[in-house]
Amino acid sequence: MPLPKKAEAKRAFLIEQATACLAEKGYAHVSLRDIAKESGVSLGILHYYFASKEELLLAVISGYKGRFIEELEREVIAAPSGEWSGALARVLSRSLQEDRKLHRLWYDLQVQAMYVPAFSEQVKDIRARLHSLIARMLVRLQHEEQTVLTIDEESAISLIYSAIDGFLFQFLLDELQRPEEAIARFELAISHLMLTLFSSES
Image (cartoon, rainbow, N blue to C red; front, side):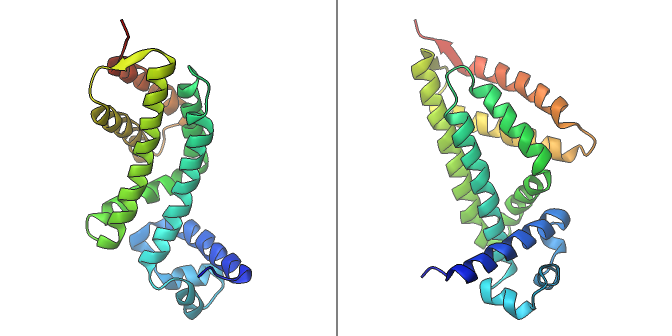
C-alpha cells in the first residue's frame, strides 16, 4: 500500500539525509542514530519508515543506481550510431564529479553483500539491469554498424561491464586523480576493447 503524499515526502527526505551520511562515512561507520540526528528526527521516527539500517541502505542505493541507469538509458543507449562512446564518457565524467562518494557507497554495498544476505538480491538486480543495457547496446552496434562479435555475447557483456566497473573502482582508489584525465584514459581503453570484440561483416 503506497504511503500518503506527506509520508512519502518525509521518507524521501530521510533517504536524502541518509545518502549524505552513508556516502561520507561508509556503511560500517554510520548508525541509524547518526542518521536520525542529521535528519533532525527521533530514532523512533526513523524506525517508523525503515526497520533497519540495511533497509535504509537498500533504499539509498536503489535510488542512486536507478538514476544512474536512467542516465545511461537516456544518453548512451539512445545516442546516435557512432556517438555512444562519447555519450558514455560524458555520463561517467559527470557522475565522477557529482557522485564520487555515492559510487564509493555502491562498492561498499557489494562487499557487504558477501556477508549480509539482505544485500545480495539488490546487488544482483542492479548488475542484471546494467548487463541488460550493455546487451541492448551490443545489438544496436551489430545492426547499425554491420559488425559481429568475435566472442559470445555473454562474455562480451561481462568484459564490457568489468571494464567500466573496474575503471570506476580504480578512480575511487586514487583520491588525487582528476576526472578528465581518468576519462581520457578510459575512452582509449574502451575503444581498444571494442575493437577486439567486433569485426566487420564480410
